[in-house]
Image (tube, rainbow, N blue to C red; front, side):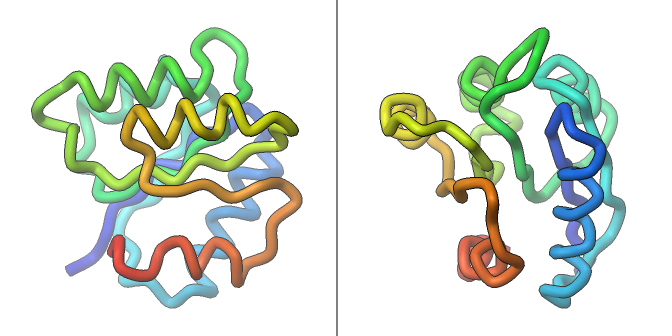
Length: 123
């Protein structure tokens, strides 16, 4: 069954790279929805049947941590697998994301293999 994916990052280039990585991972991709920040992501979630989220932590308007907490607080979205992607140097935000329910994380710059590895068992 095709998997609809939401990619959340304020960088269009990173969103494009992540989309390409998902294609290279040979996932049974359905629709790929993109969002600039956490607020756009929540709006996208309300109108799409998303099966996986790849999200940056540091974004304007609503960062990935706030977005993650709102998603996990919503019963309809609680079980969504969410991989956080970060340049975050400190472990603090990464640990916070994991405590809030993120399925895993990858540090930028990442390789396609690192993304694929995080998706094993999630999809």
